Image: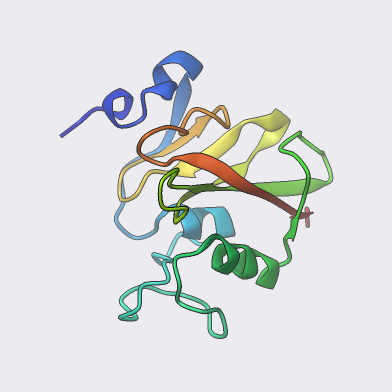
Length: 144
């Protein structure tokens, strides 16, 4: 099994904190949306949860639509704003397909669920790279 540094080499430079143990019950998209009971992904075979009315396509536009459906709007940057929670959507640099989502936590740090692995807190660019690609969109919604 590869280490986190092998999977996500930027973590070695940027650092991270482990925040929960491995679990197969939810993934990064569910974690970004605040759901720790289901795996969210728009697979065409309905194997995973995906909200009704949102197309089951692996496109950036679909993921943006999903987040709009739960109150997010596209915003200009990832700068921390006390009154908002933000989500970053990462896409594969070659295909443009979404690969990952991270949610901002206090003071500009970010939290990610790494597939069925652990949850971590990290710098926004800590998970960028070959595995998850680059940030393609930042969205925000008012904190409750």
